[in-house]
Length: 140
Image (cartoon, rainbow, N blue to C red; front, side, top):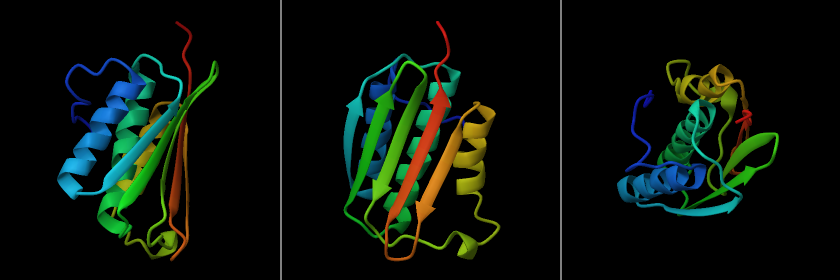
């Protein structure tokens, strides 16, 4: 799902690519995305996978959370790049997601695993959702 969408007009960094993804979600779904960051880094294959997974998490929140705002925080350290997507919306029970709905498994978790990272999704009905996406930094 959404695997080959462009990340924006010439986005060359994590911050620029996340901003393009957030703008896309805002425009399509009419939900405000608040973006904050603790650092930036150039795009490579694993960071691009991270941004695409974050875009899918933002889309899911916009479509299903019944909220007016989504918070996105990016953090770059010497060892890893992480993005947190949080909403204070409806939340969900993972066990109740129909098996034919593959966005979490394929477009978020699977994408991060293929990039050598991991995704952690915490949600409960009425409690909102937090998606933590993390990939290791590659040496330049």
